[in-house]
Length: 187
Ligand code: HEM
Image 1 (tube, rainbow, N blue to C red):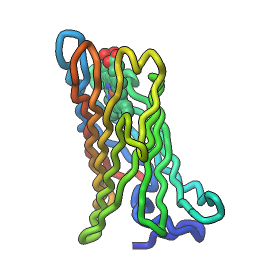
Image 2 (cartoon, protein in one colour):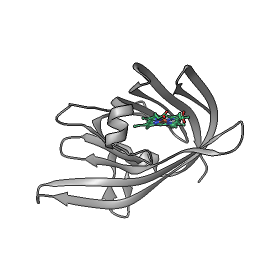
Image 3 (spheres, rainbow, N blue to C red):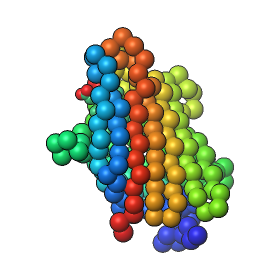
Image 4 (cartoon, rainbow, N blue to C red):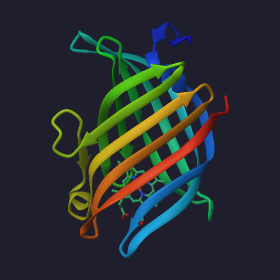
């Protein structure tokens, strides 16, 4: 596979570049009296934006992404997320930094595995983890804290599936908020 775009090697992240659409999503979200399940469809756009150098010694190849998720039941957008995926060719470390408009930011780190041209990206973060952390507003820390974040993405040609788990502390209990979908590249 050719991972070079405009002269920059994006390694395993090159497989993500493009616009992806999928309508088989399922969200499991917390409610005061239990659980809400929301079938959804979404579009995720990944763009190669070049590389950055840190401390004149680390070079990261970077994709910017934007994910827009709509509830099937009423077509309302109910999740809007933006961020970056980065790859360090020297260490093979990958990072996902994301922001959601609830007052929550995540910097998750991990590795990419490539087997038989299938690419698996695995990143995670947790409150209290010194390397890969979660930052959230005072309100969210008090009332709807995200304590852990796990994200697994599998890319097989023009098909991508992902599953993510956010371990929340909300309504006086621990809740596993999960999302997953299978998408196809549309360009
Ligand atoms: C496809 C991705 C996602 C979808 C569709 C989604 C959807 C939802 C929904 C429907 C709720 C319940 C909102 C309500 O009851 O008013 C919720 C709550 C929440 N989500 Fe997500 N979510 C996604 C990803 C994420 C991610 C990546 C994070 C954090 C890293 C996150 C953090 C939270 C938190 C902290 C809450 C609790 C707020 C509340 O219920 O009042 N979610 N999400």
